[in-house]
Length: 297
Ligand code: SF4
Image 1 (tube, rainbow, N blue to C red):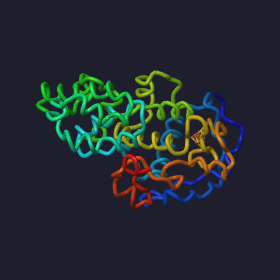
Image 2 (cartoon, protein in one colour):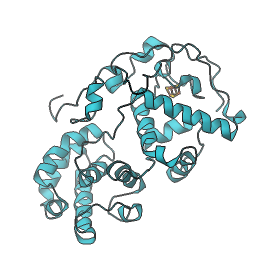
Image 3 (cartoon, rainbow, N blue to C red):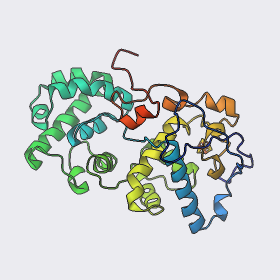
């Protein structure tokens, strides 16, 4: 798709690096907001530069970006990520406290009564299949990895219910190994930005990975996913309140009126609670609010 001819008006500036923007206040307007050049005219070097500029702006916009699942160790992150299929991170975060209180280790969960686990996981949806997955992967951890979550991609993807996406979430966030998480938001945004035309997640991962140094991959994934959840929504992106509008070929696909766009913002950008019941301190320091427990809102 060629770049929109519309000029992004009233686009929001990111917070300055090291100084987290107050998340519930609208960002300031950018003065020189011009539409990005059509992707077909863009050289490889220009694409790399534009992609990295977008990531820098997102890093300033979401300096507190983090995985939106609550976890205390690699086992909890692995289980929470598997549970997050087809539901929100919020719902998983509201469900896992009871699960991990009763079954804190892979040994405990592997030996659990499936009906009791199903009852706990009911709010996550697909609770029978998810019970099977988390009990199956706990069993595999006990039998094949001494009850520890392995830190290698090739081992993780052998666990029942664990694909590359889940494996990279665990590797990137629990083991500090760079990984790109290609979820639905990531796929949508990188195509809007013309970083790649690929539709297959593995091809997207390879194409986007080639635009950035490996050390950026994990935080890049958070930035893109956070932007997709807060501003660049699937149906109605808030283009008029978007800090990367001047670099976006898809500007104008959503609401361009700054006041109307502001009303579309979600979580801390819209002044609402986030998805984690126990968010990192940096998020709270920047004015973010914890999510309510199950049944409280
Ligand atoms: S909201 Fe999305 S589509 Fe709109 S300008 Fe921002 S990144 Fe582009």
